[in-house]
Amino acid sequence: MAKILAIGNAVLDTIFSVEQHPKEDQEMRALSKTHQIGGNVNNTLYVLNQLGHATSICTTAATDSESKQLISGMQDHGIDCTHIQKFIQGSTPNSIVTLNAHNGSRTIVHYRDLPEVSFEFFAKIEIENFDWLHFEGRNIENLQGMLNISKTFLDKQPISLEVEKPRENIEALLPLANLVIFSHHYAIAKQFTDAVQLLEAMSQLAPNSNLVCTWGAKGVWLKAINNSIEHIPAIPVNPVIDTLGAGDTFNAGLIHQLLNGNSLSEACKFANQLAAQKIQKRGLDDILNVKAENRAIANIKKLSKAKATVIDVGSTGSIILILHENTVRAYENNCPHQNVPLNEAYKIDVNPFENTLKCSVHDAFFNIADGECIDGPCWGEHLTPIAIRTDEQGDIYLA
Ligand code: FRU
Image 1: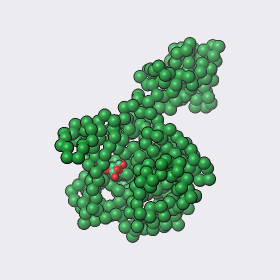
Image 2: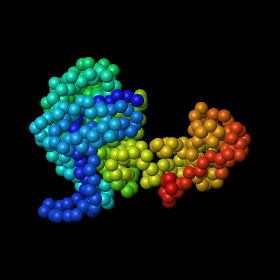
Image 3: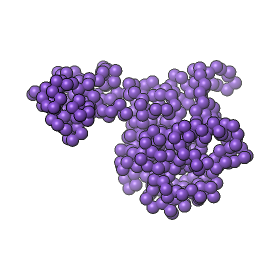
Image 4: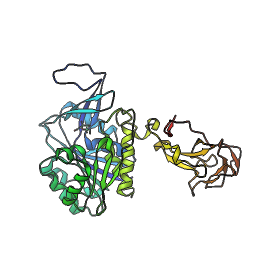
């Protein structure tokens, strides 16, 4: 578990689910209305919390009644609200979001008249008590100083910066962050035709920063310091339910994996997966428990009779896939002997002549055909079968 401080916006979102986004001068009825707490870093922290981290927000709040709702919502999400600068002038930032019920696309109308966090307020926070600092690329005037003192006082803790929209002089901040995450909205607004062009240009400005650019359904591009640009395709999701906060979820996944010591490329893959999981459900609650039913977990062409393939399906755990007489067998990756994954100690050995697979922990042998333990410490017990379906392309789904 790490301690993460994020500096940015907290917003009250009102979400109308609609048949389609309204056109100018149109009047329409929404299918449903929900209130959520939002704002980029607020969303990111909520997901980081679910990933097991201790999170704090540094933001501003008004003194109106909505502000109480917003702060108690953040606290309910497990976010520490000690570092909130209160203002008498201004009101709680609000977004009105229309969410297309058919394809999950979101349109946001945002209103704010609340001042941003001042440099003096930020400077009083004991930032050295945190393991990671994440900044939303807004409030540019004050962010320069905040990033400067962070870089000066923190020699081990990474600093990330989200660049979602073009803002005057935001580019001057890039070299001050270890990780910069650009959105395709920023890239397009800056007249870059693709992520590669953007990352090439930005790496000139910030050669010592890791750079990432998310591009919706096209996937993610990344450039680790001194490395070449890499592309990770988006994971196809059908149907898409809700894209609101998908980018914020991606950022959380990225920070989480980097904190765990993974490479930028590995971290982007995980974040991509988490964002794909998010868009399959409404909101950000229980984000790790989205059933992967709409996503192919493997393709039959990649499976073999002689090798057990272990697929991670998020919080549900992992699954063993193996071919048996040209059909796929799927079992929970859990040995009934001691309830540990079969590959806990080593890989899962397969004997294609005996049609068995072996748990690496205490050498229990299981029939590939029906998962029965035919030799070893849990003799007579079974691996738990998992219901799957395979489509014409050979893509395998949880049933
Ligand atoms: C989603 C979001 C919403 C918020 C808006 C602010 O990324 O953070 O929760 O209303 O963007 O621009």
